Image (tube, rainbow, N blue to C red):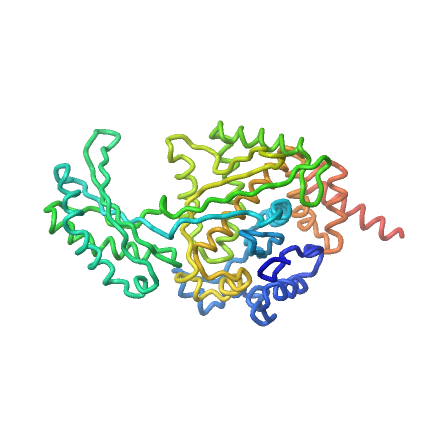
Length: 436
């Protein structure tokens, strides 16, 4: 049992019925079954009356599977993590890797303050030094004007922090450009609305003070000052074990990691695996996963060359993984306040602070990277993909819930994962049952 009294090790969870799993989640989180009703409801927790106002030309709702990854321990706290994803094995893989990474305090995560960036663009900038002096001379006035718009944000400890000038040249013709970055502490919000409104308010003030025309004024989705660093380790032991790994298996993971660090073709695929886990949590919690994806890949290429977000090394008889990435997430605002399933998933997570939430999400990314890299380095892609998709083909062939595991086992034994193999294995299974 952890210091918080919750233990995310739920043996046998995958073998329970959907109803029993919800009961186990409610028990883990200290919630009543009624509080989790939206997660098992036929309308996916999103009534049409709400969906109709969320986007245009609405005709209904589109379902994806919701599951929970177990075994997660982050900074000595245990979590069961909601994931929305259609790809098989991702939830199971994350749970498996989280079990390997549970030793001690589990995955260690550290986050910066939730500072977002707004951009005020000067397409025809004044001479060098004008913008810089303007920011220095008017910084108090600028802060007061922008913070006045958001008294609740300021009361919560956030608000405008500073402004900085960046000088640019266009890559085609060398034309000079300039941009003023405003940095805003957005606390537990994702921050787009607050930063956009501050950028809009700053634009006419900067035009008046400098005499230069402002172009765009908008949030940047590259939150370089809103980052999370995670580190996890797996003890090494000959033969492996429930929470340990064989040294040879760890060596192969390090080989694969170094490959991704050196080759952008491999790095893209490795980073996609990380985002498999991260995006699934973001979908379950109503986040802007498009912005997070864009920032992650921009960050991977920030030094001028695309590389792997995570890396693994063997240090002191442990496999150690690290990852640093920008994460702009929110626990307030957007659909977090209106989507019943999103609200229920946050209750299960038990987090209200955006920084702590981001640490869990980053931990999921590291775990997913470990699981995917281990599968590639040990089984190889063909066998791994066969296991991934055999269940889908079994369901498509008409196998019942009780028949699916046997059909999948038969397909794996055949070394095939295709619709024809699923049909064949199901027919043979039913023929054998009829004879008996």
